[in-house]
Length: 508
Ligand code: MN
Image 1: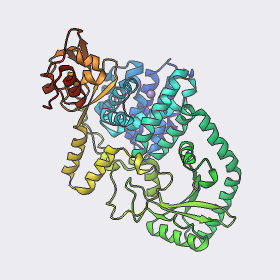
Image 2: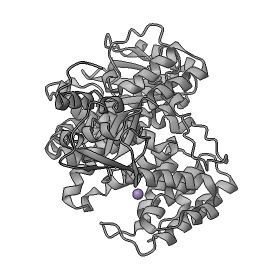
Image 3: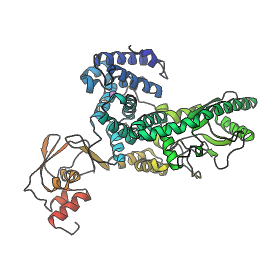
Image 4: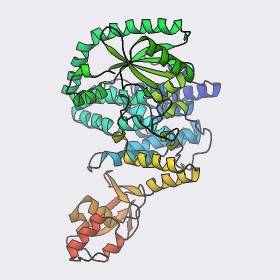
């Protein structure tokens, strides 16, 4: 059965006739492009592009990005000529589709790189936040259908999802997506732990659910009697993977975890948030030390909400989160919830769009963050990659936009990412030469480097490599390192090896 494009249209936040038309045309184009293709599951390939587009619509991105979601595999897997996409959908959609295609061609395995540098690479290659979001939505459907993929591929894809994709979704604040990615990957990476977590949760759940519904009913009544009538009250369950990580810290004692389910109260205004907190504390006794005001003191990642944990009278305690609708949307959908796209502008030149970095930065300066403990669905600060932290610190010190430019430059111009002919990634300091590259692969390759090809063309050994270059090294057994190479290298690794091979001990 062919899925209905109406299912996606109704999810679009700001519908316009043009937006609807774009989505409908992309739907039809993808359907005919992938005609006859099947996935491992036997399902028509089109289902995959449809589900990718659906996730994008749920996240709340624009019709342009949803259209690109439909088309994301047409170049790579349906051999559609990019010119045809340009003719039918324009430069911007093509730019996004080509961005995703480029990301697909990067292989993360092979070189044992640190996850953080892979995440950086992922971001650097993407160039535009929308490309990353499409790729995350694509990965979500892939991981949900992983059962049908050959076994040897499953673990690699799941591990990569946990190491790279979920943390990026998390850092972009798209928590809904990061939870879904984590929980689906967790099952394949650690099947035993996954089952153990489910079993622990099952034992816990039956009483939990009844208890929560009962508490929510009395909460509704109490708030209504204080004229807070517009509150939407529900609860969210902790993701399995993050529950597992927490269980490990708590000796696997699930009773020590208070936020397996947290009650969420959504009220119209900030003053309603505080009013609600007062009413709750007046009715149920709060657990000392668990009251966290992330509205007054926004978390560095931008998270806003008031948390408290109360005794609900039957000997149990429950965590409560109080927030406005806007705060809720931000917490679930992050940058995607309020990203202002510069749609329609000519992105043919594919100049990187770094606007999204602003959304990773704190909303306001933390004057005195005296909340040492973290809300439990937020990762510890240690989980925040250092390079993001650096950007954040920079931004706190220097508010002017030109300094932000500087901060972006400092980071992205500090390293380059180059590829082996097999597509493995080597991360080098800027200005590195083929000699640095050769030593980064293997000492023997460095010691016997004879010549190098960059993007298929022969270059001299002192040529500075550029971001994205594909570098091929030709070795000759008789070739020996020379002290002159020290001038051509930037990495300490290469210089150390050259000194030891040439017997040069003095530092240049
Ligand atoms: Mn895909």
